[in-house]
Image (cartoon, rainbow, N blue to C red):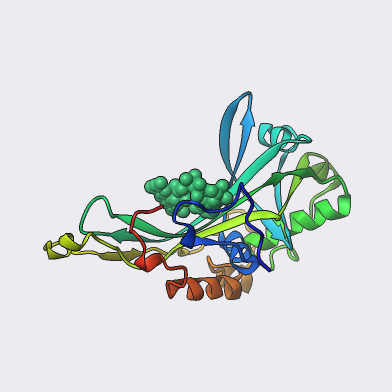
Length: 245
Ligand SMILES: Cc1cc2nc3c(=O)[nH]c(=O)nc-3n(C[C@H](O)[C@H](O)[C@H](O)COP(=O)(O)OP(=O)(O)OC[C@H]3O[C@@H](n4cnc5c(N)ncnc54)[C@H](O)[C@@H]3O)c2cc1C
């Protein structure tokens, strides 16, 4: 199901890179480890990095009840926007001008709702933990009443959302192909390093398979499907002007 592009979410700059289908939007949101929430505070626009978790057609954010971000963006009638970005490669062209990046990004616009229902709040907190490390929720201590009281959870409905995806190699000006300059793509991937055990781990506390087998494309299958479908240049990016936008 596509999200119908609105006046606020229709991709105008290089529109062929704009995608609105639910599968693409969800997969990018799910693979991204963090988002930026943009809101106005005292007339100044702030884009704050923070964690997010998607459950169905809702994106949840959490933070301290004292957080400026949570209080400002969560106030009634306030419109905010949320962005996630995945960088897949550096695109090196023969000219400085046509250097670019391969990326997958999502922008969501809407009003955030303060989640008061304890069950929805707990489910959102589970989604944060599971979103980071699937399988973790079942082995950790769950939030106490006091911790829940100090945590504010906001819900952003996924109704106005757009994705933008660039794939493929550089596209140079025709005369620049005569230059003796290497051009191509440096693919980028997030990888894990060796685990660093906390020195206060109890004897015998071993990391579970969900920890040792953690993968950056956390909800693997959908994210991989998006990578595969976009790698083919289906959005026309490869034949497009190579500028990043
Ligand atoms: C890693 C990365 C690097 C980039 N580098 C540059 C750069 O150096 N210079 C540059 O000009 N642009 C860059 N872009 C593209 C940039 O995000 C914008 O798409 C572009 O600048 C056009 O902005 P605009 O406000 O004119 O977009 P418009 O097309 O007018 O935006 C209208 C609506 O389209 C949607 N939209 C636009 N861009 C995106 C997006 N990226 N993801 C999801 N939805 C989107 C939003 O809903 C937005 O409100 C980069 C993007 C990424 C992900």
